[in-house]
Amino acid sequence: MTALIPALLAGAVVGLALGGLGGGGSVLAVPALIYLLGFTPAAAATASLLIVTLTSVTALVGHARDGQVAWRTGLLFAAAGLVPALLAGAAAGHVPQTVLTVAFAVVAAIAALRMLRPARTEATGAVRPGKAGAAGAGLGAVTGFLGVGGGFLAVPALVGVLNLPMRRAVGTSLLVITINSLAALGARAGAGTRLDWAVVAPFTAAAILGAWDGKRLAAKLKGTALQRLFACVLLAVAALMLVDALV
Image (cartoon, rainbow, N blue to C red):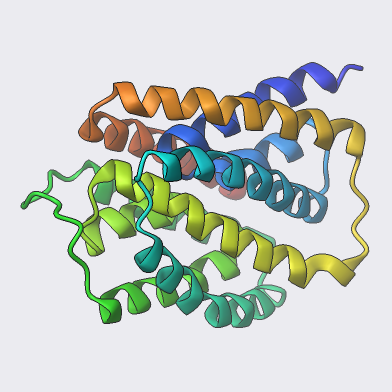
């Protein structure tokens, strides 16, 4: 019972991030599961992927109804990253945990700083397949190495590299997260990790409900406000993880 309230609160925050920002679910869920709910890193990563997959599908439906998903770009982006993600994931097993944590924090900080920079041109949504494939492959390698769904990197890439408007990038990111997380879950299926469903179930339920609130929040805020909010969340998480890894 003591874990129920933290699970519900953490799940609601993860859902708000996914529904409103199109990312940040794994980067918030993994620390919450480890530091608040006592999961091991391996169990937290697996549970996070399950939670984020189900929540992302729920949020994706809402954004798709509003026409805010670039399906062709998102599918190409995600498909290009599948093989790099598997290769990088295998390599990550031979790297010390501290190195992975520091790398995670550095990449998150870089993505946040990119989001805080003012755009030089108005996003039009016009993208080229080669650009989308290259960006997706790079994202797949990074997310496979770090073990997250990738939304916190997908949104900056979709906005800054592929020139999608912010709200369309949010919806498209959910498609990328869903595909990446499903692939990662499939790779972990035979690992035999045991999950505490008394925690995972309420966490997931709260995240799904939070995703709908996040979508409503996104509809009320300007794209630039969403970018700043997303960047601030990333910077805070990056700082906390750096402190945890180095102190």
